[in-house]
Image 1: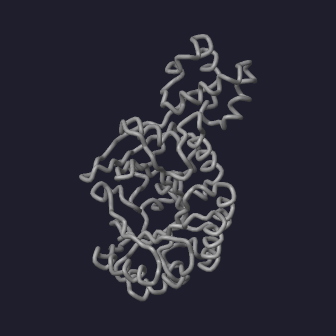
Image 2 (image 1 turned 90 degrees about the vertical axis):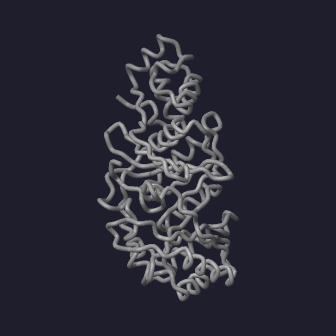
Length: 338
């Protein structure tokens, strides 16, 4: 039996039409999905007869909260269960400008970045668009607070699940549902160049973040296997084109690893690489992941790195680590029970 949530709005209208159900009912159903209804029985304005008819043709499946950990800084990490038993993690963070949710786009990750926990064990499967929406709804309803911003920076590579991610963006942006502005969404990619170009054409309002983590092709290949498929030159060209096309700055995420990429020489090389681009560098002292054998740089070294970039005209900040004590910080999400 097909899950009623696993349709675009037009697909759902057609499916309802095939049952002889008027098109206006789709709007009501979509509204209940967005409100977090748990079953057909929660859809009060459909009527008992229609609910019976629909429940015989379509299932109503949910993303469920299995467990929540709360950090000393107020960050909440959610272990979320999919209907097939697979689990992902999402992170709720409070900022002065509003609440933000980091969601996953895949169960695991196939990209193999050497410093990241999400890729340990590889990718199990892609998430469906409705499951990503379900992450948002489950976390919002548990927190009991509005979520103003979404970052697609959890488990998985969003561009490795491109079609479902785009369906999710359409769902959460829909004015008859959650109606979240695309400008309040940031997507992070390790650098799948063809998809960067396509995404800039199709979703120019969404903020783009690039997981860079190196200032040379040689060093990037050691840290990120994707660099063997798409060179630094190709990546930088795509990023410059994206910034020019959309008029929006590109954020470069740069994880600082002690004794590896946190040197003055690396900072100078990075400033040359990014010179003249509409961009911002987000410096992230590596958060601990036991299996990597790597150590994060000190806060002092990170600040020195930032000052070098700023002196060369490259805007940069050192990210405040949130949820580190519950393994909820950048690079720490993984396929595991808490």
